[in-house]
Amino acid sequence: MVKVKIENGYYLFKLEDILKEKNLSINKVMKDTNTDFKVLKRLLSGELVRIDIFVLARLCDYLDCNIKDIIEYVKE
Image (cartoon, rainbow, N blue to C red; front, side):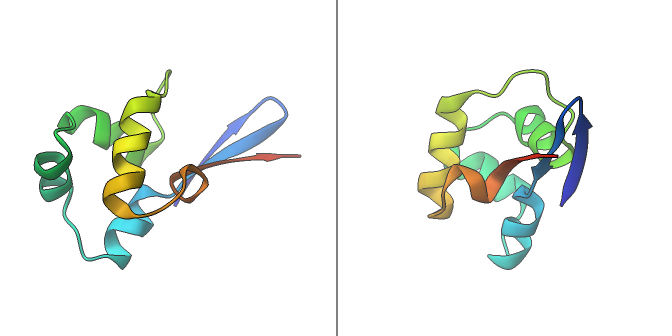
């Protein structure tokens, strides 16, 4: 899990935890969801500026989870 601090809270990027739990590699997810490797790496590291809702939807469908299981905002 990666925590990214912002002005009034922080984001938790939890994709890595889900992949470990489901024993999936980033390469398998990339191929199976037709998602760019760099996009997945940014979701794993929390180093992104924009979030593509279509990518999130594909990942949620593929991983059988909700958006909050991948990215969560926590207000302080």
